Image 1 (cartoon, rainbow, N blue to C red):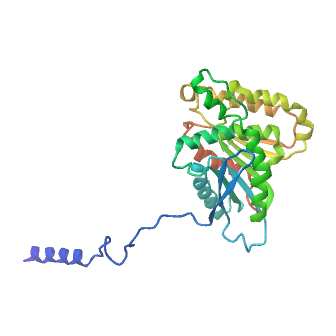
Image 2 (cartoon, rainbow, N blue to C red):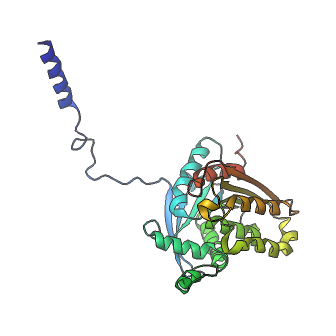
Length: 302
């Protein structure tokens, strides 16, 4: 009799439990999760001839706060935007980072079409043509070397557009990884005043027989000007980014490049380099964006 009563009680509990599939708590049509306080703007560049999307994250009260915000510009929006937005929100909520506007430059449909995405980024992020070895690769060569045009698009179109739509201050930060890090290094050398802060992650300094080292020599004439430009630069790379993984000794190349920059007599240039243990070229970005933003931004005043 006692066993029967326990069994009956269990049956009654199951019958009384809500039916999550069909009950009052279920949505008729599940809705996708959306990041709050974000916007998507579209732009066409006559400079590059390409279409872009600007994925923008703002402080919640930016329209009524009556103040201007630093702006962080990110490449590779397809993976950098949502991650960075959540990292920033986490540290802003804990008073470790200032409120800021994020602007990530994306390619329409890039998240679904990896070949198009890779082709576009290689065109925009590389500063020169890298000679190809076979006729079959000729098309690939033509899809390189657009960094000057892409830099001009950012300087002449993206930054003014953001300033016209949002309360943006002149405090601008660049974030780039891999080819994006190569592009950021190129901007740092050729037009350093475009950004005040740089987070450069795993830059592809090997590209075109390490042509960025030649750019460093060629920009020597700028150095008297650069002495007056205030910049805070954070370089990051994973300890596993070796020749075996990516075909180039990226850690040693970045250390060598860092020493070259450190030897330049530029009081306005403040730099740091961090090698993340046990991180590779694919895994480095989450750690580096966290450490990089905390490194280049001073903590907010209490």
